[in-house]
Image 1 (cartoon, rainbow, N blue to C red):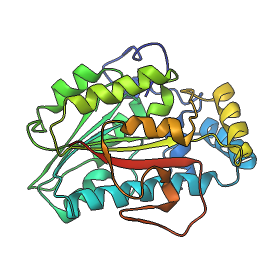
Image 2 (tube, rainbow, N blue to C red):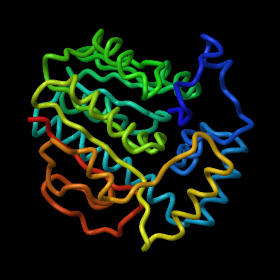
Image 3 (tube, rainbow, N blue to C red):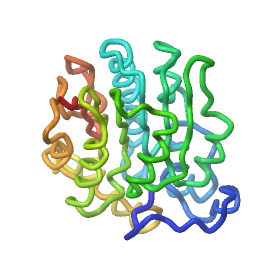
Length: 274
């Protein structure tokens, strides 16, 4: 997702022609930390330097993926959610949203949204669906809320509950009020019984190496990201019923309980719209 003043311009209808392999990009660096192959030398160089600044970055990335799996499993299995709008998808890896949901409920429907061309190229090949359900993907920026909702309505029924998934994406919106407003606009469009699943990089005096790593990334990578305190992250859930255990380190989030694990610099939570 773009961090610029507005959505990234579409320079070509073909995502392949929009891929710049000379500049490190967050989706590809994240893929590298997760052990994937969809990255380039520029991504690996920056990724290795950040790992030296913050040696726990690999666990940070894995914890975020586990959080996604726990949240989607709980929403599908225990709460009966069958529709998911996953914005800021990133590069497909193992246990993507539709795979987790459709293993439990094959009729689940998932719409993925991203504006990174390499993500879109891989989505065309990998984000497939069960016969009973449906999976679609949209080329949109997070800020294009009206376009996202309008186009997602071709797959999702907005009269029924939807889980809005925003993992590590509002970090690319620098202004607090703008980022809170984007989340509110999306949640306002969803009916009662919908859920927000959100994770966000934190800044904390206990984790100075994270601040150094983020500063390095913002000098060298794209798009730039913003850290927020756990208290500022909790504001995204204002007006929602926050599911236990609340907004906590993604490494410790489990429905109704806290896992025994060390904190990582990615916090997340799940909230229900009444």
